Image (tube, rainbow, N blue to C red; front, side, top):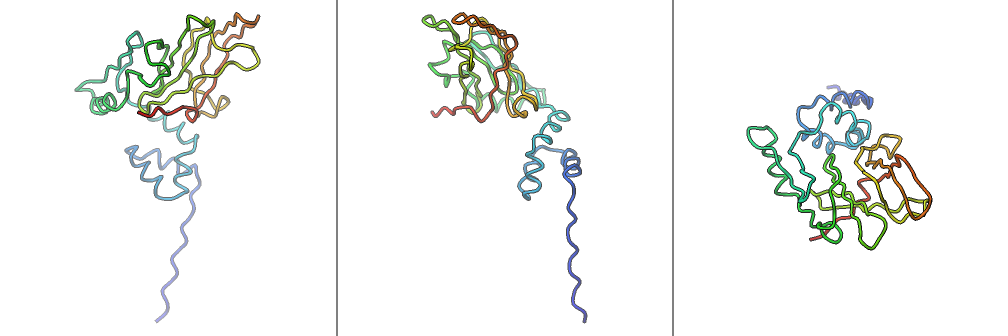
Length: 208
């Protein structure tokens, strides 16, 4: 009897074809399973190019709205909206009182919210400049933006900041930019549309 034939080698698919296959999966949970299957699948699924295509084809569901006037309040989607169960779980898991903000939430003013991040500003009565903080209420993390380099400013004043997702030329899609009209009264400097960049990895966890 002749020995059994050796199994045919598995053909390696190009990344572009793997992306098209993964984008056709029915549930996002299947992507997590595929990512755990092998290192090649994980590399493709975790790549910025694939995540950008996925967000374009499958925008995140609307879980509710965040009222930015004081006090900040999360209003979850309610039945019969299909996102109601996930919205209820988010309302229970996240800290929408923002108790983890430095110094407590009472001194901060909500400016904008996008993609699960909330931008706050704080003006001190004893300082000329305001502070900016971007926080993640679900994971109770925040990042406090540093002074603008090269301007001599120790903070931010007279600006109306908002969150804008960074493009590939602004942090590789891994974070946000904060465009603003910045005026610094300590030195004769004015910078229009100054993008203040930060990434999710910059956030500081708050331990309770």
